[in-house]
Length: 332
Image 1 (spheres, helix red, strand yellow):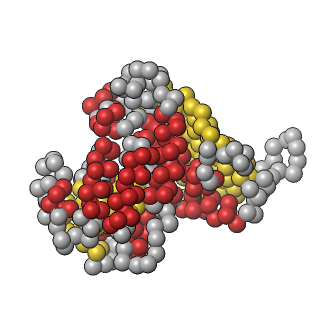
Image 2 (cartoon, rainbow, N blue to C red):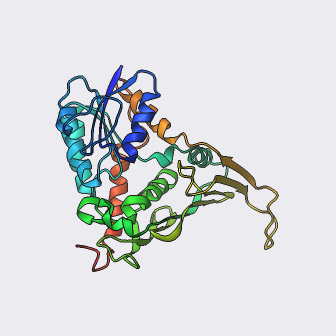
Image 3 (cartoon, rainbow, N blue to C red):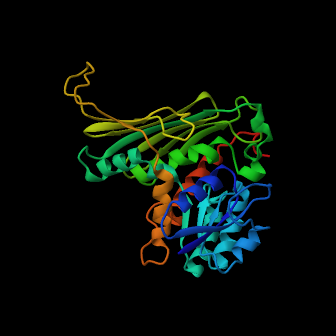
């Protein structure tokens, strides 16, 4: 039996609790949150009570971003296996510090990038790896949401707590998918701006990423002035394309998750769609999928394949580069 503690019981803490309870051989025995909440199991009085509990083998860190790094390090030093929500930290150097502790602890560390675990993304990854469509030529991702004035009251609107705005909140998932499907990038150009909300975090990012060795390029637009939630990921290859529109979530805010797979059209310049294959994904198994991976690695000789600290380091190096383009007025 793997006994689990959860630090932070907002939306993600509740999701992790629900998923862990549904997995055989896993039991959540303690939860901490500063708010008065009903949790259905013993409530710890502090994060330390969970971290220092010798009965707990693994900890889920589901806290505001600024706590992710210190709590991860503290848990690893205490001999706990750690699952931490994104972002792993605020900078790549922070991740390097975490990796040093991770290596010394010999414990499992995994980060919550659940988008890789959506069935549609798994299908895209399989097709790319099988090379049936040839190599990836370019990718384009758009990820946006609408917010209102209540966002001002949220810790996510304050850079000292969040580390940034829409990029580190949401765009980070799209960059992670670029890395997962296309490999690394060494050249970055970006526009990071506050176009509407007048916060000290960005509300729009336009970025282009390029691998100077392969020529692969990826384009990102991450925004909180979309006025409606939108997710779109396009991957164009030598012999066809994969387009994912929508993302299955509990609120269904992003619409149906629809993957379109098409081989190159033989008639040009007219558009014909006879070879188009469309799949709608009606369920979201991503939370369960990544939890199963995390728990399966604990106590085994295997390593975390998706969402490990090496993935996190690659990702934060790109985030660092994008934020060098941050405009004045949003760098308080």
